[in-house]
Image 1 (cartoon, one colour):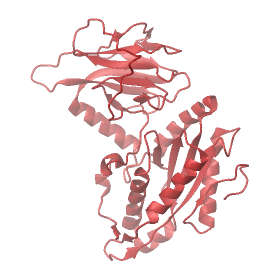
Image 2 (cartoon, rainbow, N blue to C red; image 1 turned 90 degrees about the horizontal axis):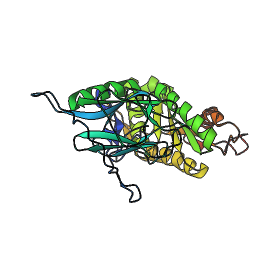
Image 3 (cartoon, rainbow, N blue to C red; image 1 turned 135 degrees about the vertical axis):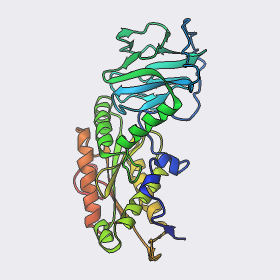
Image 4 (cartoon, rainbow, N blue to C red; image 1 turned 60 degrees about the vertical axis):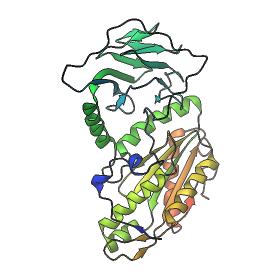
Length: 345
């Protein structure tokens, strides 16, 4: 069966999450769609009495939300339609990549027309308008919440229409307009936070670079429509293999990069092999000519701390060099450095 190319235009591709059900490109931080599981040992403390927010009569009802003012994902809108947790733990609803944040740092609880925040016995505390929270506190429109060393959230009531509009602005700024993958700027910002976190906690992560084989030759023989469509299909293939917490970004014109946290070197290698096999599983149908087009990808992967135990930042150039080796060997393969960081396999 042939996969048709050129059927999806860039304007249709704002997010791969929506384009492929069950194949999300994870974003950090975010509020996942899964329901919160309340732990029995953490009962919700009733909020003190406070005035409920009231919308202007005759207008769309305003809904509570956070606006990320500083930190990874700055500019993003986070709706507050249920109880959520904030912290650096991978299971937190809003994950903060910051060594000064506790694993479960704070909890936000909508209750009876108000929204409150409580600190979960964090090491460095939760600040609302510069004052440390010592008990459940009602949030008011415009309140500023500080968590860790860099994360600043602004609490606000906004209409769903305005939230969607501002979220669209954020998506256009943080995602590649063609493929729906994250932008290089977003990746660079997020990667810096991951490096700092990995150094302090020695938590493993992997970097994978992916490139369509003979991309320049495909452009010369088939044109930009085919090449753009191949990149879109590659992002979709990768999206189907990603999990919450992973990042897939368009690193440059022809290369994609994947960041996966809390993964072993064998799991990283398995992911790379799945991407290669799944993308090459079926030939494509070129637009206009409708001729079969067999396309493959080359991948280079590196793992911290396996390949660079003393320098987590070295994982990126190691993965780049591994990709170049895969291309030099003819493509359609996965290359990963030896544990000694010398040579490739």
